[in-house]
Each structure stands twice: as structure tokens, then as C-alpha cells.
Length: 204
Image 1 (cartoon, rainbow, N blue to C red):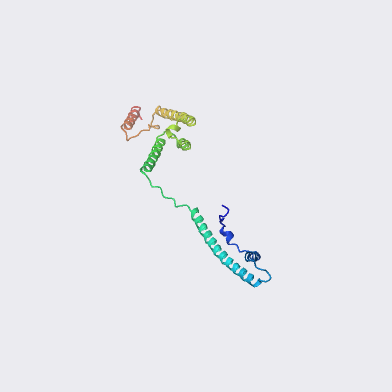
Image 2: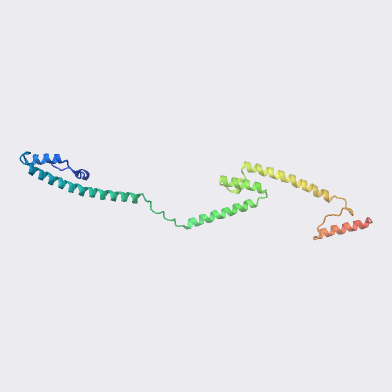
């Protein structure tokens, strides 16, 4: 396989040869005498150099064109294809619908709680933070504690109001201290009539 020609890269073929080397090759190949055959040698060297220049220019143009094509292909390869808009399926629609429904149910569950706005906000924030339902977050130890504190406080307030109402209910009626009644109700009107009778009987 020694006779098999090796493929020479285009870049190597496109290189201009050194004139001195061309001269030496011609003298060696044709057996010229450098002193006697100077004119012939010069003509052959000039012709060889001209042919080499034409070949070099042609190969250079070919390489240049090839590089341009490669550069263009690289640029096109870098561009990502446009992202296709996902087609909404029935599953996507159902999922969105379920999310909206759950959101509404959670809002209603929160509004139904008989707690202060501040406590409701804490419950809502914790539910969103833990990504659980209002029902589940009501079992959280912190919220359980907050609810117990709220209910104790609320019972104390209710007891205080009840005592005030009872004290009013036991008030001594007189001309200067008439009962507070709602005349739009039958019970209120009856209480007022009883009060007037009492005042008349007492000689007021």
C-alpha cells in the first residue's frame, strides 16, 4: 500500500511554494545545468509559480466559501425553534376548574369561622404557607392554641355583657328611670303598659 497516494489537505495545497524550492525541483527533475540552461529554468519556474498561484487562489476561495457556509449553519443551529403554544386539553380545563372551586370553598370555609378578622387572617396565611386546607390548619397546634385563647377571651366578654344586661333587668323602675323597651315588638309594648300601670298604682 506504499503506492497509495495520501490525501493532502486543501489548506496545504493552497500554500504557495517557495520559488527557490521550485527551481531546485525543476533542475533535479529535468537534469538542467543551472549555468547553461538559466533561461529555460527561469521560464519553467515562472510558469510553475503562476500555476501554483492560480491553484492557491482557487483553493483559498473554496475554503472561504466553505467557512462562510459553516458559520451560517452554526448561527442557524444556535437559534432555538419557536416554542409552540401548548394546546389546552380537557384535563387542563378540569384542573383549572377544580382549583377555582377549591379556592372558593376555602374562602367560604374561612368566612364561616366565628373568629376575629385577625385570627382568620392567621389561619388563612398558615394554610397558604403549608399548602393545606382550612380544615387541616385548624388542627395545627398553634392555631388550636390561638382559637382557645380567643374563645376564652370571648366568653369573658360575653359574661361581662350578660352581667350588665342582668343588672339593667333588675333595675328599679320609677318615673325617672323608665324601662328600655322596643315599642315595635309586642313584648316591648306589654312591658311599657305594665310600667304605666305600675306608675299609676303607685300614685305617680
